[in-house]
Length: 219
Image 1 (cartoon, helix red, strand yellow):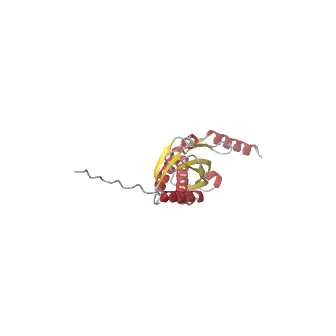
Image 2: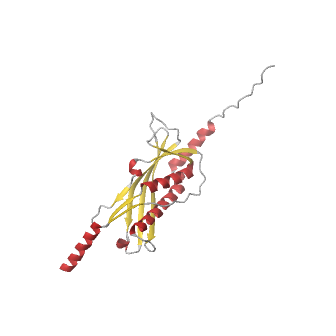
Image 3: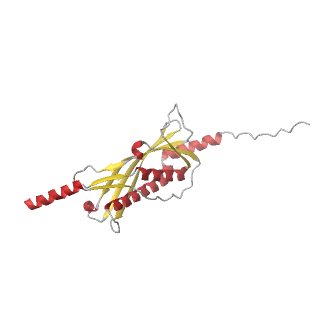
């Protein structure tokens, strides 16, 4: 490789290493058009989920620090409360010795965050891929269901004022896609559906409380 080419490559690598793009993902998410079920649901966000921040470690890519914690909590609260109608955020998972009043507890975990930038795809778009693992527990901490949920979003760089705003837009689209998948598939998870059917059968067998009688005072 000629010396001039080597120098250009070195300067590019130094430029990439010295440039840091940092953003906190912010956006609005549509309310899913679903009829809430009659269940008392709780959700548990661990510290990793609450403060999740992706940091690019590769020396071959530009430095990106992307914080999604608040945005993903906002999304899950909005979708789950619409799905089930009654949602409580709890600080710990239930245990057999310390059961909760909630019928079901959802514990989401982000397990993968990926992105691409125009320099890599040679298209004027930013792309974001999200992958989550969701676990559902009964009121005594027993595992009911465990499944994977994904989201994808992209946005053109056109009309964007900065790389950060373009990446934010792609991340918001990915979270909206995740929210749509969450609202459409959660009640179709076989274990969740079986749990709901069993819950309905139990409620149907519980005898109704006898109506109170009014006793007339004797003359």
